[in-house]
Image (cartoon, rainbow, N blue to C red; front, side, top):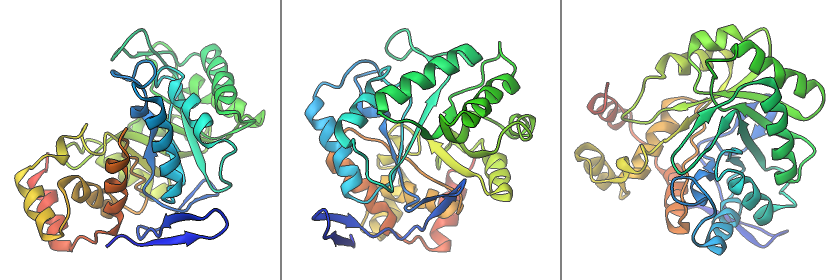
Length: 298
């Protein structure tokens, strides 16, 4: 069942989330199910979307549904995702947490390079601030470790920018436990964004570390680029049991996996957005959770 309540002030129907909240570095993420704004861009995460109005409407619907955590990056487009967010939602709702990332460069569709140099990160955050129309980024994340730059220097630059008031909270992406330990005394890391889903769970040790240190874990590709939405045997069987679709079960499994889990499924479709948000209504039994865990174990 899809529970919604009327926000009388804005005359908007907002979903009442069951998955609970998370305290992200002192900022309350009201709903643990967020939104990833990567796929509102063009094909190959390159250039503008084919239907800009649709992309704007998707972003508006995100906040209408009560989702208050949106993840983006300067590399998405590049620049396009951040620009669309501002165009669709500025001035932002007071409770909206926008997380963006820096440290990646793009040379074409599907092409990704890394640049974690202090010079680039300073330029990147200035660009994000301008595009998002903000004076401070609530959560700024190092997109990936650049092997040419000591990770301490990259994260140290973010710590300096935090002292300068341009960043409120610092997060990292594509980090393992040893990487986190290297920067533990350089900055207060409040989130880790790694590839993780029901069928790809290399970051299990990272989740354990996050739980012990009250760090949010943000799984990217939470639906394995849509593959988990297909009629996989175990997922389909359990989805039918809950009158759901496989993608909803995969998201519900993530929400059940850990209280620090902050899934950010992304889409360019309003129908899929609503479908994803409804995953929060599903309460998997312990038995079904374990069946899925074992079937997709790696």
